[in-house]
Image 1 (cartoon, rainbow, N blue to C red):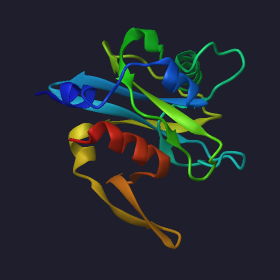
Image 2 (image 1 turned 120 degrees about the vertical axis):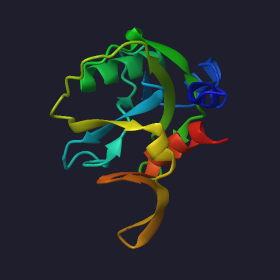
Image 3 (image 1 turned 180 degrees about the horizontal axis):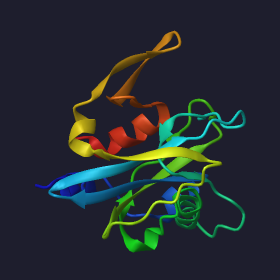
Length: 177
């Protein structure tokens, strides 16, 4: 079974029940290259108004009144942040929403997309500092416990990229066996 099939078995179709259970959306954007699967990870710009300032995360954001659905939210947010048009990819499904621990009013619905082609990335520098295509194989073997402040957290750590908290919990859902 290939990696996309393994991930897909942990997904479900986007539904009205899931739509009503969240108020924000992120995109888990995957691409296949040379028999490897890569995940787009973005690093948020430093901002005093952003509770996830400077963190490695997934592109996305809160639903706005103009968004007809959370699918529209994630497509709009990803395009605003990275320039990626998710219509160029395939929606594989979603995973159960995840509530933010730092802001319990935010409940995030993660959408999983597989890009069909290489796409240019044009970062919105007001929101994002950088991005990386992280190989899934390296991510999966990089899981460990880290100390942030006085607390220990589970995280994926590759070089200086540390994925923890909400993003870690979301990604963990698609990697379960």
